[in-house]
Image (cartoon, rainbow, N blue to C red; front, top):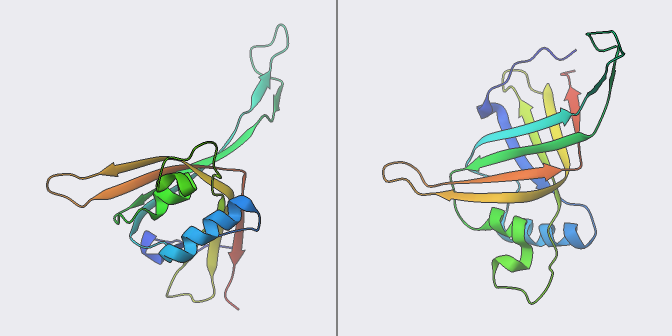
Length: 165
């Protein structure tokens, strides 16, 4: 049973790719920019929603059944480092020049691993599968760090807990 608590400083975030056109494009960017682990990340949010649909019978004020609907996986990554890697993961070849037509949109898996240094071997890993970036923001404030933020959508998510032996 996992009873560990974690802080952001216990975490690492990395990119993994699967074979195929979209995965191969993400792999080339990952290799070129050494995104494993992704450095200078200051915040990661992974959000999963289940669109529950209540069924109400005539004459009943409370729902008699909740039916599962669509499940959506999305989130954000905040990063205090600008080198174009995340923008390239969103746009692929279109980050370098305007393509003549359609272009491959890179797809990758995002792994967030947490391990308390006081308890080696006990960890929690959340892997977001089939990630595509859908928004990139760049902020350059007058008196603070330059930050980039990406929003993503994904196909599904899995969680793995490991306990110390």
